[in-house]
Length: 336
Image 1: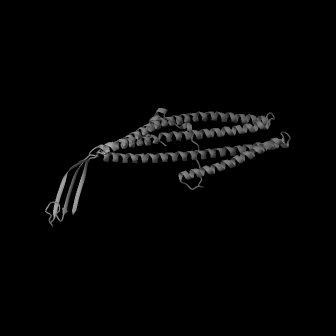
Image 2 (image 1 turned 135 degrees about the vertical axis):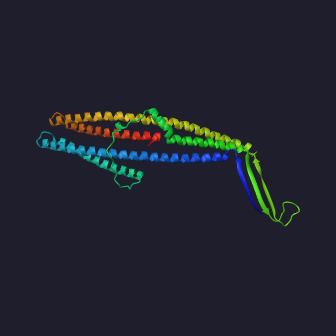
Image 3 (image 1 turned 180 degrees about the vertical axis):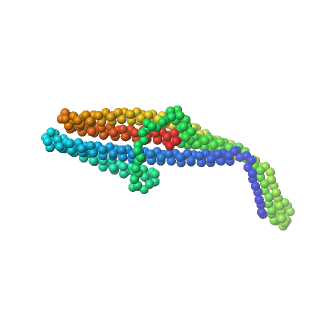
């Protein structure tokens, strides 16, 4: 017996279209997850780069401070030889210089460690040196207002789009389960050639051909009972995804507001740090003059120098923090 047949689906509860739609949304979900991973890597690379940039700024500040302290030490040693100041003043300055040099060693180690982390993220050899550019002034960054950032996040946020895709997949899964109790209709046909002929009596040793075509319809009666718990499970999954999607919306608003607020806070901190640096420079100048005129103690001079260096550190850290918050805001809104 040799036969050939065909079946053409007319209606099957729309299962085929739902399966196609599910695959399309699954592909979109995979793309969003890939883009989220890329954005996270960019944010991590930016954080390492800015950390490296901060260490280089700290290194330059410490080197400049060591140079200034060595000049002061030379002057104090001259005064000590002439009996104007005590030998203990010289020892105190030398001790501070030793601490500064030790700090410089630590900063160099921080640079090496951060450089390796950055190289691993961006795919460079471990010991290849990355030299950061000069630090951009965050005050030059012009930001849209908070409401505009929210609109951007609603269209571009990776978490929002991923959650939306998962919710749509659950909705399609529910529709697919409901389709189990719908009829199946299609066109079918069959043609065969047989020998011997045993389809009709009496049988005969001759070729026999038969062609059949028509409409075939079926309905799964057992699914009327078996499908009810499946549908309840699918509905619960959809409700869970919808609740999770609302939670993601709230979380995105929180993250956008936090990043936006922290960035503006960082800009204010930069201005405060600039004023602090100016005041510390003036204070260090006055204390230095007073010390060399014998109207201030060596501890006052060392404290003033330390305060100046710390204020310079704070200014650099504030600028780096503002840059990180800006990249964090871009990451949350899906524009990094």
